[in-house]
Image 1 (cartoon, rainbow, N blue to C red):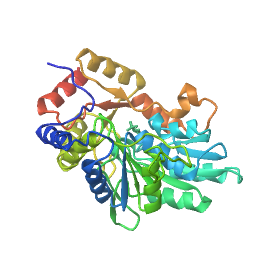
Image 2: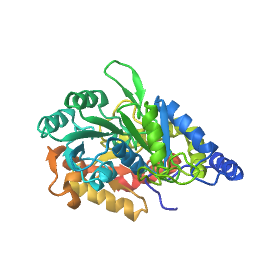
Image 3: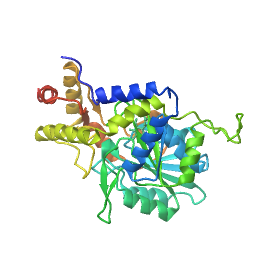
Length: 362
Ligand SMILES: Cc1ncc(COP(=O)(O)O)c(C=O)c1O
């Protein structure tokens, strides 16, 4: 019995053939027909006019911040229960970072966001970054409204939520990635759709997409020589990797179904993070009765060669963000103490799930 991973890539013949086609086209470069096609598919998937394919979700967040010139006079407000990449680019740009607690679903509490924005010094420019935690859409209608009232830019970090759907207050269903002035996807190796490493920036604004694309390729001006009026980045997605993404997108519906079935199996035995309508079931999160039981469960799984992980350690508890302001925090701290991400890969068999359950029950 081999090691059981948390969320390994689920790739096969389709991806192999797609990579081969990209290779044979000789666009073994960060441009080419597969990049263009992947962008077209992503935009259609997210209900956006434009998608810019990039080397990572972190790069997409960085370009979202570059678009608005986020810097030292900015405050970036984000949920505390998330991966550090949500605020990493803001930190590097010298912005002030403020954290907001979540509600019991794990997503940002809009009431606390409102308080954070109300208390923000009027001289500061503000960006709100919401997160669709573990593939479960945040309350983006409320967040967009609260951000707009303060004149804050709203960016949706949907890195974990490719394929998730969200019912808005008008009753209409929208894909993750449809919210915010800009939204971000990740295609890291552990995500539901992977390109091994990759990401995308989604927008309805043609100018924003064009600038992001240009910045992702060193901000080269249209001259025969390399001409630059600004300093850019090297953030474009490889054509070979875009080919993997195209094949993966074609399987996304099946991946979501499989992960939902895995989660349902766990839910028959364990308390789970409360469900959110339309989630993509990226990771199944069980709630153990206490921190001690969580640690015991982790140890039991490790002994059975099964990878599991506590939920994100809240960012306000991270040494690097000591001193950052946090609104609330107790809910995220409790989820960190009790929450355990269980193996959820789209390729898991029934026996794999049974192995996890047996190790946990023991
Ligand atoms: C919430 C969140 N934001 C951003 C990222 C960054 O994406 P990437 O790893 O593709 O840079 C990730 C995942 O890795 C994530 O989970």
